[in-house]
Image (cartoon, rainbow, N blue to C red):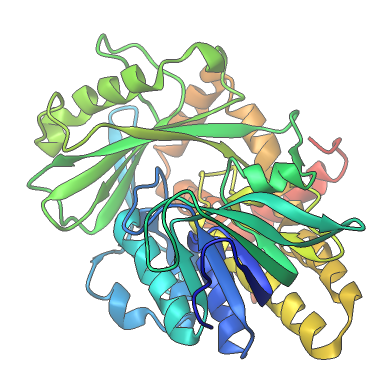
Length: 428
C-alpha cells in the first residue's frame, strides 16, 4: 500500500472513483472485508457540497453501522420535521421503526465527508486526495481502472503529474455530474424529474432547535407564491443551513433564478429565524440533482455505479446521502462476493438489488414529483395537509421512506394503494 511515484502504475483490487458519501462508504465496507481498495478524490478535505447536511434516520443507521455513532454524537441532534405552510406549522417527530432510529443529526458536509473518508482509511483503504480520475482504462470492453491526474502537490507527486491505477473492479461514485460515469456510457433518463438546490449558512440564535424545518409555500418578497420548497437545518454551532429546492416538473423551471429564490426565502423567514438575510456566512453553493434512479446502466462486467452518480436520490424530498451510503454498501457486498468466489457474474446482482429495494418506491415518487409540479395543486395539497396532523404524519413516513415492514398502518396502506395505481401507469 505504498504511495505511487509520478508517472507510475498502482494496482489494486477495487478502484473507487470519488471519495464522497458513496465512495467512502463503499471503500469502508470493502476494506473491512480485507480487500485492497484505492479511493480517488479529486479535491482535498474539507470541501463544500450543496446537499446532505441533514442526516435523517436512514443515514444515521448507515453511519452507525460504519462505527461512527460516537463521532455523530458530537453534532447537533434533532428529533423530527417542522412543516410550515399556509400560515400554519406542525412539528412531526420521526416515526418509530424497527430498523431506523428516531433521530437525525445536522453535520456540515465539509466535516462529514472527511470524517467518513478517514473512517475508510482506518479500515485499510488507500484514500488519495487531490487525485482526479480523468479517463477510464478500458480493455476489450472491460473497465480496468483509470488514468489519474494529481490536482495538488503532495508526497506522491506534484500537481499535474499522472498515475495509472489498474483494478479488477471499479466503483463509480463521482457524484451527480459523474464525468467518469459518462465516459463509460452512463446517461440520465431525461423524461424523468430532476432537481436543483441552493443553500448557504446564516447566523441565528435558533441554531440549536430540535427540528429541521421545511416550507411548503416559498414566496417572493411581494408575497407571491414561488415554485419549490425551502428548508432550514439548525447546525448547533450558532448557524443554520438555509436552502431551497426546485423540481424540473415545476412550471417555468428553467427560467427560475435560484439565487434570487434563495434570497426571497431568506427574507421570508428572516424575522422568525432572527437572521440578517443580506449577510450570509458565505456565497451560496448550488447543484443539479438527478433523481429516482434516473442514471444508468448501473452495472457492467467489472464496474458498478453508486449514489448520486446513479441518480439515487429520493424524488419525494431530495434526500440523497442516505441512498448514497446504502447503494455503496450493496455494491461492496456484490464486489466482495465476486472477489471471494471469482465470479464476475455477481456484479449483475446489483441492478436487481436496487430494483427490489427502490424500484417501486422511486416510481411512485417520480409520479408524485409530476403532480406537485402544478402550483395550484401543490397549494391545495399543502392547505389540506397543514390542517391534519395525522395526514402529515403519514406523509412524513412515506416521503422519508420510513414505512414499516412489520405492520400495515395507515401510511403503509396509503402507500400500498398508490403503488398499486402506479403499476398501471407508464414508467414515468
